[in-house]
Length: 173
Image (cartoon, rainbow, N blue to C red; front, side, top):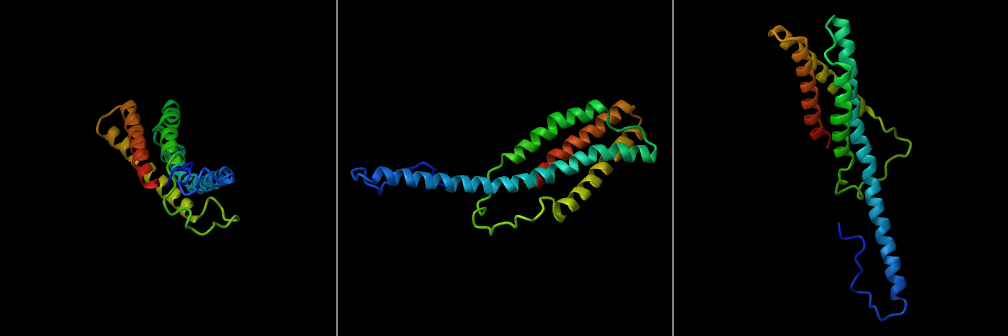
């Protein structure tokens, strides 16, 4: 994308109305740049939801599923806070500050009545949540069966969650 504030060379500076034309041109360029960036905001919001919902659900439901099947909690409260404050926020920021796609201005306008949470986000949230729960509980149980302590098993579950979040961020982009 060209620089938003570049003054065109075909407007001669000697014309008295040229300064008005320059101002109008710069204003129009600024509006186009803002429209381009704002169109990318909606996409980035969807990406944040696509990333944040499954990873947050996985943390909560992992503890619920562990209670239902009779396992001890695979994550402590401090681990959940650490993952939320450090990993989830930093990875969601990476997704949120992503540049808009090149074709964002060529797409037809979106339906203003369309929901931000559509079927794709709901299905993918359910699927990724289930995969993360299976991975965390599986690694937790594997470490316990392998002779590890509950503390090392919790560390294994947290490492599984953080690694999965980092990898999942790549697919949300």
